[in-house]
Amino acid sequence: MPFAGEPAADRADTFTLAVDYFDWFGSVLPRRLEGLPFEQQAASAVPTGWSALGLLKHSAATRRFWIRHVFAGEDVDFTWPGSPELEWQVTADDTAERITEFFRAEQAHAVDVLRRGDPKDVAARDFGTGVRPTLAWVLLHLLQESARHAGHLDISRELTDGTTHLD
Image (cartoon, rainbow, N blue to C red; front, side, top):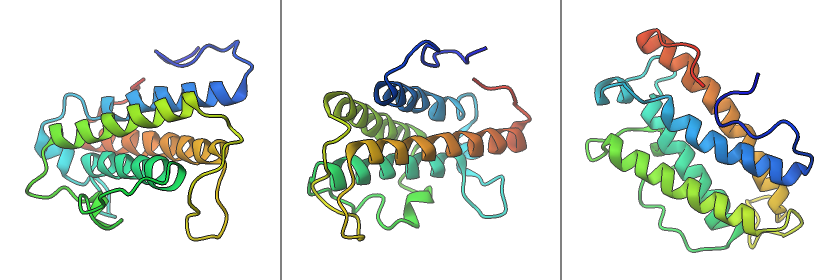
């Protein structure tokens, strides 16, 4: 039984199906935080110290890095959230609304680029490896990260308030 909003099970075009799943996960991640007060969204439920809101911030920054910076070759302002370590931190200047809007904007932009692109398109930049990835590779990298982080948020949510069985 598919989850609410999950792509149709009769799809055969794998690239389009993967974009659809990435789009779906873009709605799943912020839903994991719904109903929690800011203090619980920003507090860590795990020993490593990341919070649900910090993970959402990291996910937005990851989309910005791969789609805007690597694939499109845009000159991205990385001063906020800053370093990869700071992507995970909820600072005094952050609000749930700011981080959620950042995530939604980067998710929407990423989906738009993916829907207009061809899986064989090659990124404008490499990512320190000397190899410029294809759009298909970038998509699958982002998709697997989104799926893992949805699971992380499931666990975080259960540890925070006992909520399980989120779609």
